[in-house]
Length: 633
Image (cartoon, rainbow, N blue to C red; front, side, top):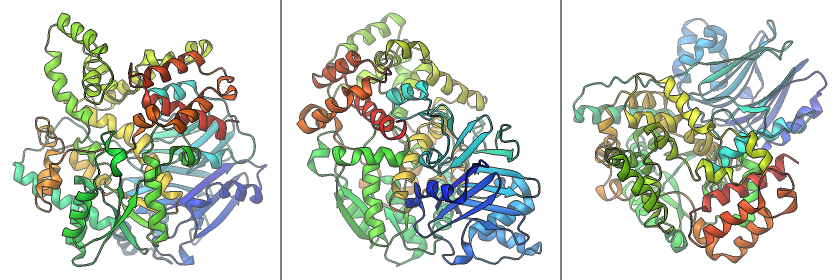
């Protein structure tokens, strides 16, 4: 796990490159190195996990010095690949997966991507052809951004490194800001900068360093949603998923540094700990959990501590209990700086808190349950599909009536979800599915922007993107699987995985996600949808697997979120209210002529007086203000 940067610019020298590397030094506390072949400059900051010796330092070159690699991530099956290469006469100098990846690329070319199982963002340069090949893992676990304008090209693990040196066009993407207001994050390859893009999950870039204006991007991985499901008995599916998941956990326990676990006491993290306990025997595992306290419970985030303690006791694990310290006033700007993107969520602060404590205890790897909800159906919007099917069968006049009536209901924890479910009854099913991700409607979001910006924003960009995703899986007609494909290509990489990586790496800690193992993910698409969600029971099959390891009180308890009491803070916390007014009414923010001051004031007033639930929209605006101030000045 590391940080990488590459720049094609003859005017950049090694000193300037190292300045850019300094902006992502937190990603690699164990070493750094550079490589140059004008106009190409490569930099690497290292967090040593597999083979912590100097032999695994990067940039790493092939024995003949023709190829050079910079790599961030882990290849979990690299020993199997290495054995294949050894049988073909290839020798190795280190025990690192970096060297395995480099030699596998030299032997297999781009087809190496079809062989590796891991999380990664890497670049390999061939000095003979002067071509560079850049790739990102299947699901976007590891971040990779690139800046491309005419003949200017650079790529890095974090945006801040791209902007650290040389000329950098800070022209904003209004569509991306609009998406942040609506969703808390940005869709597709968008960032707040017009000329900075994410390399999408499962995509790669090829270019010649003498002709950087010609960029070739292609998709190398497609999650196999084919509409075809294997016909096995429920028990057979339980055994198969258990086997594949166990193999994935075993692969991801590979580490030369101490390893620990996130443990919320919920299904996903508890099951991973249980499987790891089965694999490692009586070895005592270390786990970290957050004690949410009573304040968080007021917002609907139940305190999971009781359940986390029970699971830890069952598997003889040592549980590190951390009091929730998501100080939105003190930590918010630093959080946005680490995230590189405007994201309207407080959960990243809790991830960072755990990672910092793990680092202090010398645990450099954490195992996370992220991805299970997205593969096997774990969100309330998946349950909403079940209710939506019944509501859609109502006659049009009745749906219109329900929409009108519920729109006048006051905002309250008991009415909030019902209002969201019924807000789009007269829309098409595709529009309804997209709307499950909204925190503001397109109309409400647009009202927050200035007159000039309103005309420039594509208000249909989110809906259009989701439609393009469905075009990638034309044979998958099941609505739940379509929704899961949305998750895997939007919310998961652009929100959850982004903050999981950035906030853990801010502490120099690697996070692994066994549910996003290539084999586990591929298997999920062949499971009949009715085994993923039965009625309103989400993750049905995964819960059946868990019955082999965990008590039902853990498996079937009510799902809880991972966040903070934001609505309470906005309505009751005077210091936070003052921060909102200071930031969103500030002349430097309004003076950009991006947002409409009256629209924002109305949003705040409506939220504080329960006329609408604009809490997370306000948080998204705060994140945009912080991002603009730190990145776009």
